[in-house]
Length: 296
Image (tube, rainbow, N blue to C red):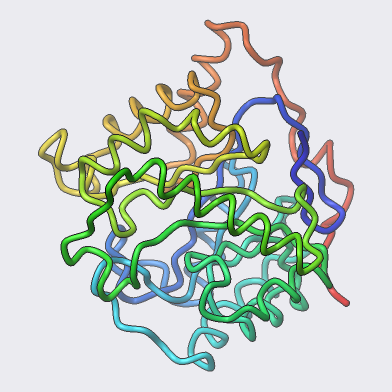
């Protein structure tokens, strides 16, 4: 199985990929806006790359529960300078966490190669056209409702079945719009319109989604579901997050979106060494001789 983002190709099975989080937002739940300026975001991204991130995920709009939407122009102002500053400085592919087509198109033209879409193209079908035309990687995430409403009593007859059907429908829809399967990653959307019980069901039954033959991404770093289990605030949930990561690695999850790249990378390397599952992966500098982009 491969994941293709423009000319970048990741082949599985291999050690899990780590997607390092770069929040260029003043209202992030996890870092309180510490990387909200271009210079701070770039410095943080470079550190994540040095720490072992395989992908850098840049976001200009918070999608935490109850977050206020921002304008297209403001999101562009936040993320495009960061992308432009990182292109040529890192070999890791740049991902942009956006649900706006105009931002996605501008980000890909600026040098990004992956779009991480919490709405999976449901509000703007043109997103599929952009992904098909550019060959970009596309992360399809499940969310019930919107960031403003998603935690207002989320309910499902069967959350795992609902997410599974959602993936099937989105894969079919994307195929009809010319997006190739190898461009797609599936994300169950931990914490997006789910209770702690729903999140636990999704994580413990994550293998149900392997039937789609696409890489699965989990993003639970510092989230409240960890706090519900360990009774700790966001910055003190690293141990809980590492435990959940290693459990998920054993299930076969291929990609993890995390704030804590260094610790997560270290934990996975040791676990892999003890398990004898994967040989050491070459560094990004050795496997990629230049930064490939989706510029048209």
